[in-house]
Amino acid sequence: MGKVVFLYRSLAYRHAAADILRKARRLPRGAERSAARRYARALRDLARTEAWLEGRVPREARMAQRMTSAVSG
Image (cartoon, rainbow, N blue to C red; front, side):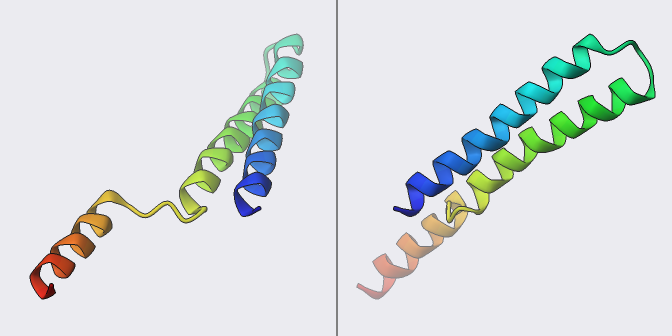
């Protein structure tokens, strides 16, 4: 169930980022457009960070676990 909730949350962040970026393209160049683009980029990065924080174990940690279990077993 947690993976489904994560998927919806990640998709919501990505959809919001795409929507804000679409709106920013309509604005004339300037501070408001730049701020909207930065906000969209931050939402996209948040979706990527959420994927990393959702319990994805780094590869090095998995390799270390395998080595310690192989040595002890």
